[in-house]
Length: 71
Image 1 (spheres, rainbow, N blue to C red):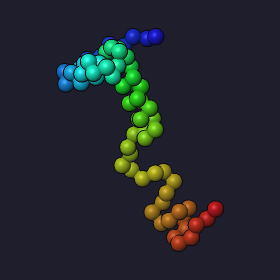
Image 2: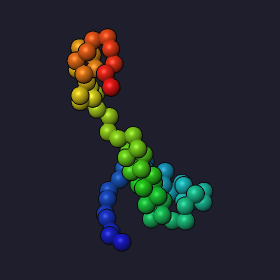
Image 3: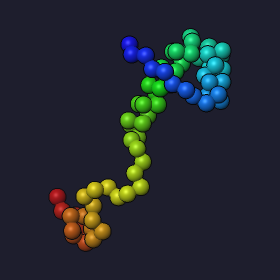
């Protein structure tokens, strides 16, 4: 398994330590791996937020028609 070195803010380290102390995880490594995996899954599911409109939709209606649906 590849190793990664990161620097995190102290408040996050404290939260991870508390989760380990409460028995949520066996150790820091397991906690970080699981939390990172969960975060990546959530990001993949929801995706990045994009404030722009979805491509393919025009201002004058779907597929260029004002008041009708075209299939």
